[in-house]
Amino acid sequence: MAGHEVIVRPFSDVHRMGNKVVATLLHDPTVEGLDVALYMDGSASMEDEYGPRGVLAKLAPVKNLVEPQMRWMLEYLASKDRDGQVRVAYWATGDGSQLEEVGLLSAVQAKDFRFPGPRAYGKATVMLPVLRDFVAHMKQQVQTGARRGLAVIITDSQLSDGPDVRAYATQVAKEIAAGRLPRMSFVFVGVGDQVDEEQMEEISHETYPGVGHLWCHRIADRMEEMAELVAVLVDETMTVAAGGTVYDEQGKALKSYEGRLPAVLEFDVPPECKAFTLEVAGQRFTQPIPEEHEDEDHHEEEEPVRAPTPAPAPARKHGGHRH
Image (spheres, rainbow, N blue to C red):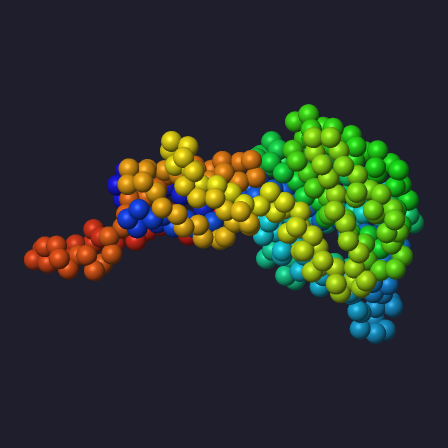
């Protein structure tokens, strides 16, 4: 189909120049099909971080340390999510075992969304409902194309149900290994000096047959460091299977990338090659190679006598503007 280009995700643009192909990635294909959720601690120990409410808020300017961090994290996490919307909830609310759902938020919404804290601060810090909520969420999302899940969980205190969390995580890992659940990762971030680091390590260092690690964790000294720490952990978690290989139609390797994939892939193809396949993180993406575009310089040599027509204009069209 001359002149018509089909651009396949995760590519945003593909050019052919002679035997060289230049392919631009729309996003990191290691997170293709990723669904993200963010759970923020809503227990009573967080109340000072959100600042006073009600009458107290009118007495002096409110210093909400959580809100700017939540906005920053959400903008970042939305860029990883398959549809650009992150599931957000406060956890450890009410009696400590309840979740208060905020909703699905995009990067645009996150810029000025208000995060005043939960309606009812929790009397304990019970994490098991978070895991159950995320598993139920992922079961729904796989129906619409999700292939991997990432839950970011923030706390500033010791968990009330550490053994229950570990037992449930073991069950989740068995379901993943059996193919009944998609691959999931849990990024567990503690903030401040009330966090039980030993407890976090017990949960995070567990390895599971056929799955390996489900968790990674880190502790931020201050709330102001939280968002940046989350970004680092998410990047580390999602690029474990970094690198990739490009193949031609016959399965011959054209180029291998050992480290993290660059945003722009450049490689040579045989003259007769009509498509290539990128394999990364166990997934394969096959992209037809568009016909080579002629540069405007080439037209000077050919039939300058003809009356100008609009025909050459579509030749500059590339299929990946914005998705």
